[in-house]
Length: 225
Image (tube, rainbow, N blue to C red; front, side, top):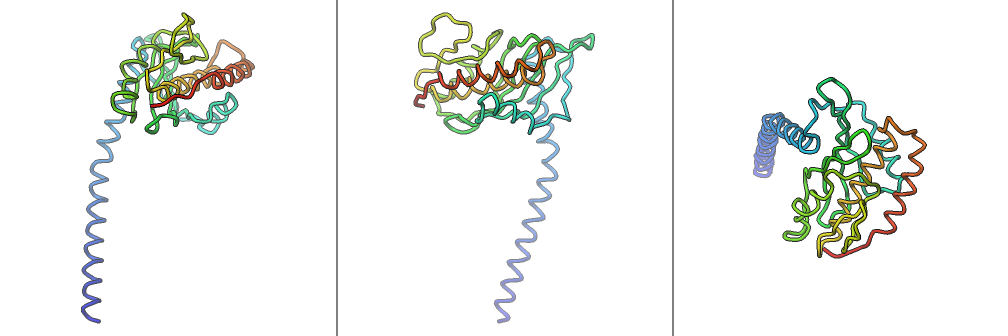
């Protein structure tokens, strides 16, 4: 009995020390990790809004409201994680930088930022995290991201053969799931912009966006990674 109690005490002491060590490591690394994440977001904002002087994070962002807007537009596999206001040197609003996550990637979530001008045109997107098939879906950085730069369209659709339409995105051969996930994520971000952030159009336009979004979802193909 004494031996069992001794073993239990030793095991408890080891567990306690290990827990304290892990807690200490977390406290030590928490702030540096947060700083690195903030720097990564800052770089991503600069990539999609190079002309902005400053970026103002919106602490009052309503995630539940954002999800309701997306679901109304037919985007149930995407989330808006937050947004920042891009401001010019004179303090005027130049546009917005949204952080979007699409949950429809072949290998998991794809998280990115997207820069939207006040007129709804897209500056571009910047990937924050992606885990897709090596050699196929991982081509998104080189093949898909550049296609969204300087575009003004909604909704975007991905195609295997372009016909010259402004809203067409050339799909990655063999990775249409990744292509569709990223395209859907961009459309979701634009849907949120038109429904919540656009200051030049009445919010009634959200109904048009919802209709267009549902149409785009029905037109998108299902491919293989």
